[in-house]
Length: 432
Ligand code: BGC
Image (tube, rainbow, N blue to C red; front, side):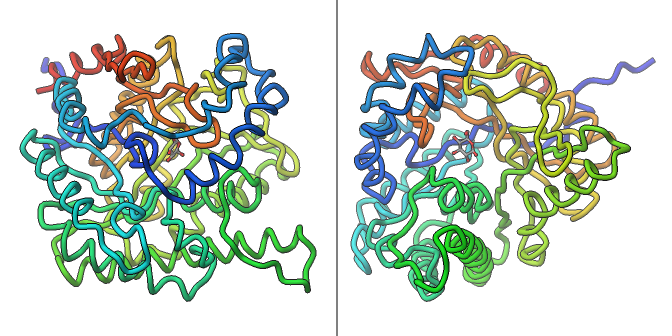
């Protein structure tokens, strides 16, 4: 009897990687987010108790969460200067791919003025990835915008797409020579929802139309920005393919494993279908012709009951209070494959787990789910853990720790590989 090895299941050219985003790690960025952080840090610290004290780990994070500096990205984890060292860590973990984003606000800090130093930096960055045998997955937009662009209304204003296109042309001219995989946008669904419906991310400078109430205005802005982001993807796809037809271009959206709590209940099923459509499929349906692959960012299984109420299983929660169901990626992958029949990459999946209690289990369960999906014919081509490093978790700041590698910002940004990451590295070594 031949015992099947994992190497028989995972394709030989499968990409094993980790994901990062510029603003969350680089340090010293000046964009609409860094402006928003300064404006909101004190208030976020003051309201931390109301927002977060329900979480089981509140006592451990309290001091940090009530401190305004927690909400300032500031020096980041100094990845802008330490990227070589960080790639070496990824290599030490036996990874063969790396997802990162470039910061538009560095490349074009003032309208129409290119910063050659920043461009050179990203050219060197990509070269370094190649020289360390890490396949670069270049992400063009991970939520941050140059301040000047945001002040013009950002992606809310359709006219502004001309600035985006000019930026993409610059990227096409200077940054794609050594790249084969591009992700245009990260999670338009999360950013549009969090910026406009939940007020958790910065919006743009746009005057409210007096014809509608503030509540209606929110939805108008939400749909506007969402539709314009779809157009931004299409135009980026066209420009980049025109320049280099061999590029493989996709988009990473946050997709949830959305299920009916009571599978035979009509209402639960209807809510589930509606939520699946709007959260998972709407955007992908509209841009499917401009997608060479689909990037799946997976964090949640959501069980719906009645008219849109979420009721989740009694499974453990991570440090952010998100309940954990890593195996939910399996039905999700099957559904994505059945609908689009395009290559899939898991472009993010991970958890905030400062004590490293659950990370190994999460990765193991994800591996089992990927094996199942592959054995059923899903064209899955890679898995990127979120994230390589502990990083700046947007409106929650620094206390959530997602990294395979812990970063101690108080001790000279010292990097330490977590035990779960060592386990993962050993597992990968045995795969070869
Ligand atoms: C985002 C990341 C974020 C992660 C964890 C994803 O939705 O792309 O930037 O850090 O979730 O919340």
